[in-house]
Amino acid sequence: MGGGAAQATGAAVRLGVTSGMVIQELGWDNDTDDELRVAIEDTIDADMVDGDYGNVVDAIILWWRDGDGDLVDALVDALTDLVGGGAIWLLTPKVGRPGSVDAADIAEAAPIAGLSQTTTAAVSKDWQASRLVTPKTPA
Image (cartoon, rainbow, N blue to C red; front, top):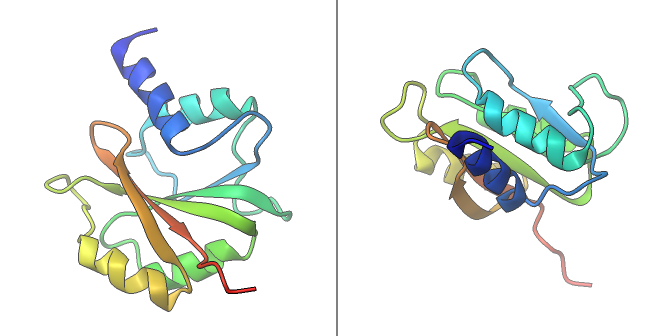
């Protein structure tokens, strides 16, 4: 396995994906990281599903760039198919890359959409991921 593929596999593991999970991918375009996509699909041992899947999913990969529209709306829409306790991994271009998203925009959009940001990780040469989850409510 080459360096890029090994890094992508490590990134898939950092995203918490495991075999058998159903992962929905939103916002795919020709600039997404194909090595990371393949590593995720290899890890879950299946293809990721798209927005037309029509059933609940364990996690969501949302590729997002500055200029893609309203982030709050995209996050709220993504929550529709997410199983309780699941995570949205918001993948954005790293700072300095075309389409990079200001961290303050994510910090502002997440709570409006009813989400908390828990982790940010570099997942490839050009992309970083922010883990967004619904806050735990007291029992």
